[in-house]
Image (tube, rainbow over all chains, first blue to last red; front, top):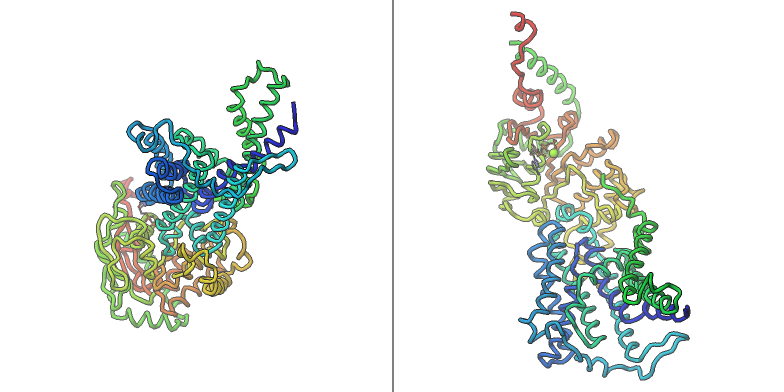
Length: 329
Length: 311
Ligand SMILES: Nc1ncnc2c1ncn2[C@@H]1O[C@H](COP(=O)(O)OP(=O)(O)OP(=O)(O)O)[C@@H](O)[C@H]1O
Ligand SMILES: [Mg+2]
């Protein structure tokens, strides 16, 4: 049992590319739910269309990666409009249903035989991001004590965390403006906002599109980082991890998604690494937990940690507990 | 026979109140409103010389209940017009319909000469017709000041593309804040300005909602029971604000149950019962209107009295 190994793995998870990508996606979700009150339970759908926008453009159509990125963003906008136009005039739960269903329908659609000539079906697509890695300025690995990052990984992390910072900055500027004030008013009470002359539908749509584009960017980055897309990686669990991340950090806090993602991935990789190490070294008997169970079991423990957090810090780590004491009169 | 007697008694006692009320000195706005309404007959659906809101055949049913069935109603510009009537008479529903918050089964209505039937609520508000809610809608996780600032119209920073460019809207934002602060002070909420509106008490929320509506600078403001739950001392100052608004030219439509309040500040009163307008007139006309008294006290049921039972 090498504790140093476990810890360094966990740190790598906390600051790695995956954490950056999930943080980015959660920034978009936070704009939806945290600042506008939109119940988006299908955020992974935006990631899917963003990822496939890049992959299909390059692999199937032979376009440049950067054109593909624009196409991915365009697809997120279209998806937001398709989901929003029929539902945003209705009560909030309709959007929730539409987004859950929409994301799943998209996944089945992209993996269908019918779409396979374009999307690669169940096998997905790969090796389409060479243009991105050609720009990699890092030539050697980075060693920070026990932490080792490959040059490739470092490049994805740099781009990922930069995008997280940039989008967070944009969201900060937006929500601290009169536009953001209307958004928060819509979250609190749509009718009140409407009674003061605000076009609630338009604001909700703007928020849905912008948050969706950020989600699409995150999806595109996953595709680029792994040089592959597969429809089954965009399953509903991803959306729920994003919700967990947002709530863990604190919804409607600018830094909430960032902190949430770091902690979430720290916990997930820590537990994964710990359990693997412990079973391998015989600390935990293989009769209790065997190797293949670890992947699932770690999320059980992550869930447990979330549960504890909700009990002791219900507003999230950065949340203002005062907000929860406000009641309806 | 005995019915008529008791009705007469009520009418008499009302006439006494009339006598005491008229001793007050009316404000300039009240005099202007009284002069404008001088020739108007106290009949349901009567035409007004300068109507800002005109509603025709507006009706709405909920299941079997005809909640609103207004044949014709006009609201005179620059007056305080009170809507009164028993609980469930359809006053709030009428508010919801004309302000675009609910869709009527039939009917048209116009504001300031423009047909606004079926227009979305936010457009109607932007046109200058703003309403408050009977059950207050405080924006809980916004501060009191932010609640009021939200009311300002034509804010440059409310457009998404301009929002990140602080310098585009900062100047206007400062003006908005200054105006909002003045309103917050006027409604005695200064000490709460930077608190979440969600911690406001029920009465404070009424005040906040009125301040917020006034921030829109409406030509007409529709207040649904603004005084409910507000302490008596503050009611007096609220009445002062409402009268001052009227004196400045704003039209006010007010739903209220407190008869003393209604009689003291209204220029015109519209009485609803079971969804319809059953009477209209100046406070003096309404006090002595038998239909109104009947609507409030209920038709005398033909319950047999003790003697009749014996007989
Ligand atoms: N959403 C609704 N669904 C069904 N019935 C409704 C609805 N809203 C109002 N009603 C009914 O319509 C009638 C009029 O209600 P409304 O709220 O307009 O009365 P009101 O005059 O404002 O009464 P109050 O003085 O008590 O506020 C009532 O009988 C009420 O039950
Ligand atoms: Mg009512």
